[in-house]
Image 1: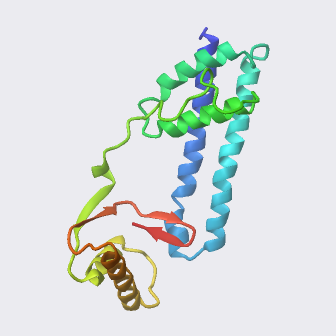
Image 2: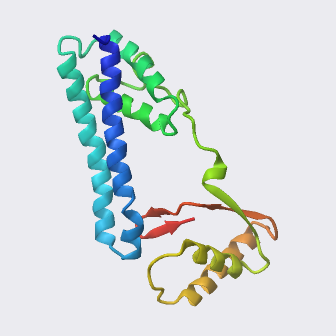
Image 3: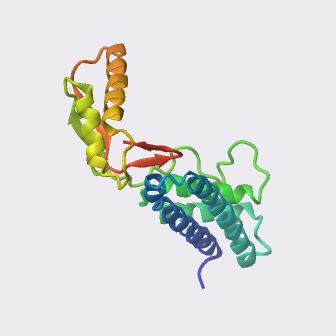
Length: 206
């Protein structure tokens, strides 16, 4: 039989994996929601993400209590389980989120004030195996005409939606960028651009 500490670590890791699957499934809808201007659906998705976190946390704690009814509040069990959990998540690119998830489970059981280093992860303790910036960033030369950069960014996104006034948006975006560049006294250089588009509310960020 597996040690009880390992069963605790596996129980929480499984629920975290379930949370990430739910989160990713919701996130995959973002582009279609944005392109279809489905703003209410986007707001609903935000709530669904929060619900996924809260529900899986409750399920994780329930799993632990069922597995270790008499020792569920044993701090030594959680301390040793924490170390085993760290080994399970350390190679994940989202290890810091996984560590926060573990902390959230402990706080559903213990009345923790501040940070309890015996049973919780502290800031940056688990950095994770984050992907290199080259996998999600690219660079563009800053052209003399800011409108050219805005036009390139919009063209590269290939949104499956009609523009009400794409030309006007390029002009407005270029003008805003020109003001920002003058304010920062930047006349040349390179611009970092996100390869995946980040959607939030009614915005799409690059």
